[in-house]
Length: 221
Image 1 (cartoon, rainbow, N blue to C red):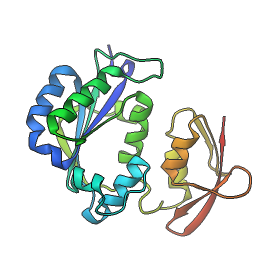
Image 2 (cartoon, rainbow, N blue to C red):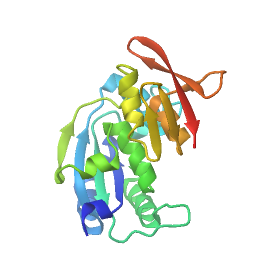
Image 3 (cartoon, one colour):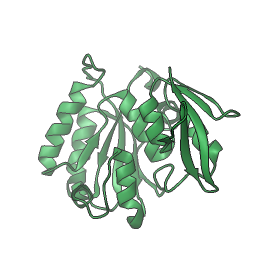
Image 4 (spheres, rainbow, N blue to C red):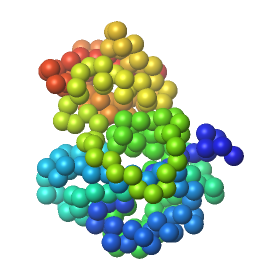
């Protein structure tokens, strides 16, 4: 079966879990088909806000989550599951069960996993500014490749077009760049990805760019 006919999933092994990196990668390679591995580095001073942006939570600098994960380089492991078990919510219970086992092995929540292809798409958009289609068009590499870039959209967008071009990569989403108008089935994903704040008039949100505040329209379909 070709890669394009398989669902892609993601594990993140945070810095504090990398003491058991070799054992974990050995086990992952036996259970799953590894496609790509990135060794990701965020600047230390940007780690807390990047972590908060990734999880969509308010996580102040020095919070418990940051102390648990560590602020150093982490692994992003993209893989296929030849034994996936999809539940009624679209989640892969095999990945969910494996995540729980790995966290127990690591002694804490030192590993993140995407439970579904939709979550994979969201995760890699934040991490790399790429969607699943982009990733699958690339070459495979199962040895870690260094990636030194901030999480997308932090601390702000270069310009409105950069933000809209990222929104285009969300599933079930259409973008009229000339009108800054986005229609999507995944409005929460797009809003969070763009770090868009709703304002009082109809379907209008504001985002922050290098040149200041810009306005977009965002509608659920």
